[in-house]
Image 1 (cartoon, rainbow, N blue to C red):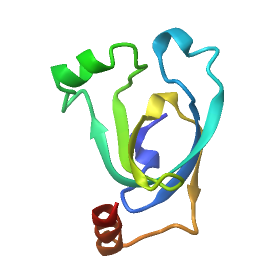
Image 2: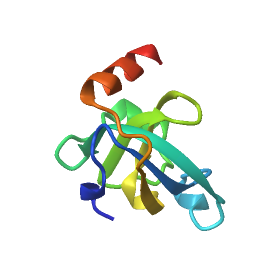
Image 3: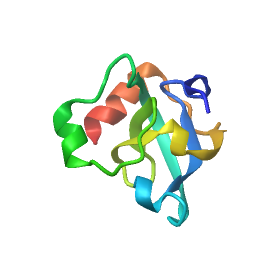
Image 4: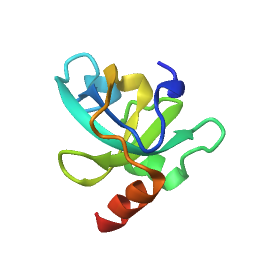
Length: 107
């Protein structure tokens, strides 16, 4: 899947593994996630730091990392695009950059 699907300030729902570890990829159940996107990171151009890689060595990573506000938990979360399934824009959750900034500060 391409990063072009995601735009900051827009909300999306998708299926994502409950546990996104390489060794559990095939048996982990998929759960629905909803996120208000704040940024898309190309980890090839902007690699993760060594500390992050060491803390979570078994995470099934990909090139594109989408970060935003989880609309169920109201906290910042990040998801790898390559692990997502059935991505759909949630059209009733479009925010302006000012509203997005305000929401992110309040969490």
